[in-house]
Length: 256
Ligand code: 13P
Image (cartoon, rainbow, N blue to C red; front, side):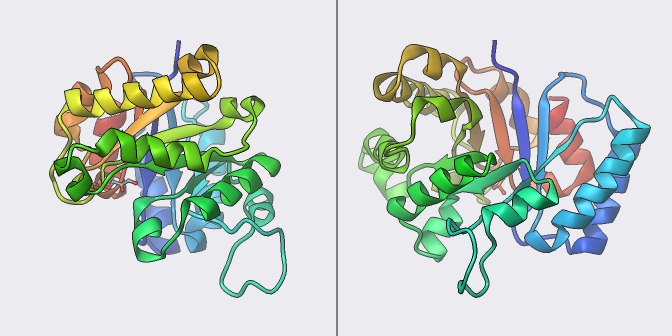
């Protein structure tokens, strides 16, 4: 039985003051009717504030468990890498998850599968739990090559990653054409890809790993479509962008 996992990717939104207010507000209204795993992924500059306020709020309300994730990291441990953040720095802050290979990083910052593979290995080494994002652009979908492309990313990104790490991995299927566009994949299309990802994991590793793997869908997830997406058999959660920085929307998605 896979526990659903909903994570909010705040992207480059909410400075640390706004982040503190967000956590205060969500704590005040918090409910988790579905008993799911929840994480928020603020920008680096808000991580420390979010972790401290969450610690405080969770001590007051033991029913509230919200974990924290980073949106990126570098694979090296330390040194002359101006502007980068190491896995150890995230771990020392108390961060649990890290998004790796988001399409915005692949497209805008030219991250390759080779780099993503190094980042995944570094995350596992430092006991961070990566949320690996994969998914195709519109052109590839229109050419009918969405599965080939997305499963190709998966295979390259997981190169040489041992089975023992799979327990700590989440995959997010995020078709690029559905991100921030208001255009969601149909639940059937999203499920078909998540199922194909599971089958690929079964081939690359084994069926047990595939059955235990948490696969999120991401791309214009909103309160109005969360329930339908989450009811699909191979979709185990959501990676939410825009709707995750609105307290009421994020809570409505959690309680889909
Ligand atoms: P939106 O929910 O804003 O479409 O973003 C999805 C996403 O990129 C989450 O990582």
